[in-house]
Image (cartoon, rainbow, N blue to C red):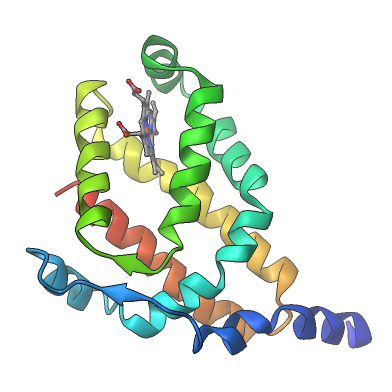
Length: 177
Ligand code: HEM
């Protein structure tokens, strides 16, 4: 461990160090939003940490998206849905943009409307809730791997990982409402 561990932790301790400076917003006038945020204790502080982690998501977006599609293409039912309605290439682009935006730190009308659109698209193509929820697991696994790889201090990884877990949960709550 030694020096390598220290260098690693110094390199990206910037995620938490920079979090305080991040500009984020929550529009509490959106119906249902305050209650949902309260339920999972998703705060402005979490959003700042999430936004501060956005460059890491950008850096590794190919890896995250690949893990996602490698997993869902193993399931014939999901493969069939994709082939019927779209292409992996097109969906990869959509997911890239969507995931990076998820780390933007703004929860507002636009955020909610985009998720309702996803819900309606997934409903149209017959994607069951269980598949949708399950497909988040690989995203979360890869994100955790990235945090452990890039950030030396376990306590920091835990804090960032907890914030990320909350935004992923919030996303699912809105899409599945
Ligand atoms: C469409 C995100 C899971 C299949 C979309 C769109 C987004 C999205 C942003 C575009 C919606 C629009 O603007 O109309 C996500 C996220 C997922 C997820 C964040 C989970 C982490 C899945 C899974 C499948 C899937 C598991 C498996 C079949 C599709 C297809 C479309 C689509 C085929 C395009 C339908 C069309 O264009 O006609 N998804 N998706 N998605 N999603 Fe998902």
